[in-house]
Amino acid sequence: MEFLSPPPVRRLAGDHADIGHLNGNGNGRHHGNGNGNGNGNSNGHHQRAPVFVGARPRLAPTTIAIDRMQIEDVSVDYGRKRAVNGVSLPIRQGEVLALIGPSGCGKTTLLRSLNRLTELTKTASLDGRITLDGVDIATIEPTALRRRVTMVFQQPNPFPMSVFDNVAYVLREQASRRPKKRVLHGDVEDALARAGLLDEVSADLDHAALRLSGGQQQRLCIARALAANPEVLLLDEPCSALDPQSTQVIEDLIVKLREDVAVVIVTHNLQQAFRVADYVAFMYLGELVEYASASQLFSAPRQQRTKDYVSGAFG
Amino acid sequence: MSAAPAIAAAPMPPAAPRRNESSASWRVTDRLGLAFAWFLGILFCLITGAIVLYLFVQGIRYLRPSLLVTNPTAGYSESQTGGFLDPLVDTVVIAVMSMAIAVPIGIAIAVWLSEFGRPSALARVVESTIEMLAGTPSILLALFGTLLFEAPWLGFLSRTAGGVVFGRSFFAAAAMLSLLALPLVVTSVREGLQAIPSHVREASYAVGKTKSATTRRVLLPAARPSVLTGSMLGLGRVIGDTAIVVLLLGNTLTNDPSGSVPILSALRGTGSTLTSYVYYNAPTGDGDQPGKAYAAAFVLLLIVLVLNIGVDLMGRRGKGLLWNS
Image (tube, rainbow over all chains, first blue to last red; front, side):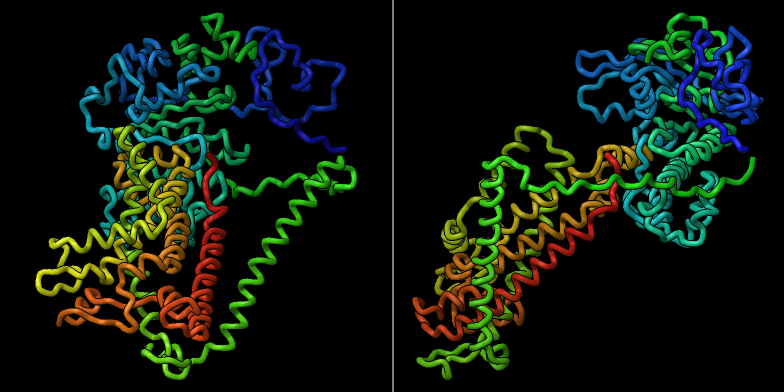
């Protein structure tokens, strides 16, 4: 008789939660029933460390780390409402930084302030300083800044044009139709290759982008964001609208990308944060509660609130 | 790391069987309401069908191919009064001219309202002006047009004799007719733009594009079905209008150019369209050639029907290829 492995559970189980049996590990009642999924990560015997059910192993950390951005005591207000309160964080190339926290904790606002997208909201105002390679981003032209700090959104949003034109649009000056297709071909394919999409679309680059699958659309959005050759890539819950398979493809991609570009990802999915991030910042009610390496934040959080959140007690 | 696995579509769960609810289980009042709705629906179909059928029968009776290629002449019987070549051509000319004015301006206003709209007080004023324009009877626009285009400084747009500006020309009529189409274009394009989720705009800003580049390359192409729908609706309104044409196009039987420059002279001159031709030849009109009126009305009806089908098809084609909000 063959047993299917259990479906991945999208929640982190804390040390006090009674979920030992889900691992098929050390629980007599279910022995031999859910077992055999070869989960190398299960850690159920350990009473201290949290357990990631059905998690894939993390990749090894990179060796290089270059400072790209500094968030220095940044606060963002929408009118009278304070969304982000006095946050300071480093953003480094070679590392993936994950912003986690319950809904409305300001993580997306913080992310959007990094390429001054918050300025599109009329009521938003920012205090503090954010630097990119040592230069205050308030002094950089927004269009120039946003080519150096590009962003991928929650919903896949390719533009209503062909796959090729989606990437070429970024490579061209503003609304220009030049340089010609022939000239850009190499750069477009390069960007698609970096996003791991080239093999699937190279046969027909004139295919309408909105006819791709959701996961392919999102990778096209990543390709688009990479085409500008940015120093920092911002990802706002890039996988929340996608199926698990596409999610895995994009997570692998994120880990691969961190060598060339500083990656900041906002995610609601703690397992995802654990899988892709080198550093994790936990935010709550607009404040940065804890910033630590992923392994430390998930296994030995210093703050009680962090511990409660990563163990699933709230949020 | 291994190559990305091909992404297979997740198997769909079997669709839940749709329960076909019978109205027999409804309360009496609800069933009466349903019956009334059905009655009204069928009634309106019958009325429309009767109009189309009547015009169809009459049109077939009187429409001869020769009518489409001969010009109207003055006369007292159907055999003398000729066809309606000029009105047919003028209908097309007037339609093209009006849309050439209304579509670019309409798109510009819609883009400004939807994407910029600052200061908001001005936006509100523009919005209510557009709404008011949509509700203005065309005869009022026509009357205003006669005043406006008789102004000396607009004399170059129409016939001028001895310092008196005639004020009736293709330019005058097309300018006023474009005001009829404008609100329809603006409303439709604006709705199309607002249906685009904000994250799509932001995605374009987030790769360093300006608002204008985003509008030109992303938003307007995405709103193309709405632009087409609005233009078609406006075109229908322009082709179907009579008052402005009668008052501002001069309502001459055939084209009566003014001046010597080939095309400009024709556009500065007067003419008539199918609607004013029907108006002139209706039993109550000056011409009183009902047979000609029916034939022309039938042609007009065909044009409008084709336009409506076009709107329908475009509206359908634009669906289904958009984003989640």
